[in-house]
Length: 212
Image (cartoon, rainbow, N blue to C red; front, side, top):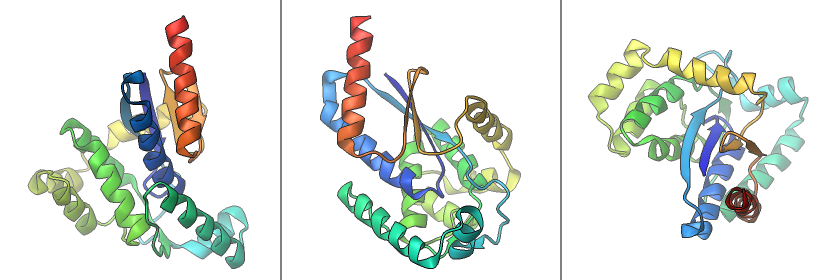
């Protein structure tokens, strides 16, 4: 099975979903051969470099109050802990386009999923800016990428066109929320589901493919 995990670094449910999906894949083991690819998506493509206060953002975008945000964060922390991801304090929403460019390059170097996990932790666990050049260079180094090449990618705008094309591809297919998991280009699983839900869905899809 080919799994395409469409997500944004800024999305907390994407952190939950990726960890949850990987747990499900470990449970499935050799019952199905799986190729998992991380794909880009921007929830806030117009976010300025200075970012936006998270409370102002959710109030503007969703009409949520401070109490509602607190309750949502509590749920996210609980769901994250259940799949081994720790959520810390996040006070701002940031632009993630440069993070996606770096992820594209990391994929060419065979380090995309490692960098994805590291960026999710940088933002959602430590509250760091995933659009910051300094943060991106440090995280790239942490996962074994060449920091000088990473610096060239970030400074040059390299892979911007490729990232925009992939995001446009998913939008044209009707994906407007993440995480979205596309299986074999035919099936869609959405949301940060528990491992049991991912496992059941993937086993059913694999069984259907074998029967066909």
